[in-house]
Image 1: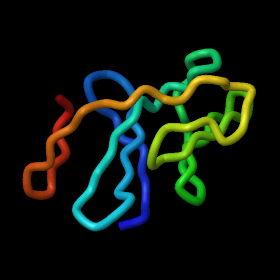
Image 2: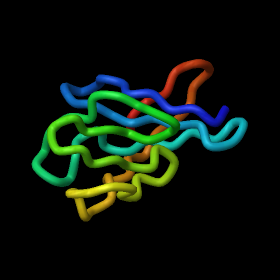
Image 3: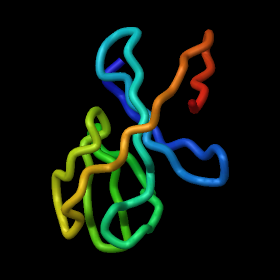
Length: 86
């Protein structure tokens, strides 16, 4: 709970977070500035090392530019210990 990770699935990068117990959210892990994949998560922030943009892992909001658009949300399903895109 309260953490986030980058994951690879369907040939792309995803930013997955657990804001509260039993709640999971997923956003695209591709920076909305110039399309670079996010490279790390620091303090629940997805970080793009291409140009320094940072995104809130819980809601995809831009925390630091140059990106100006939030990360698109991805619907997911939780099945046991698996998170399934869709």
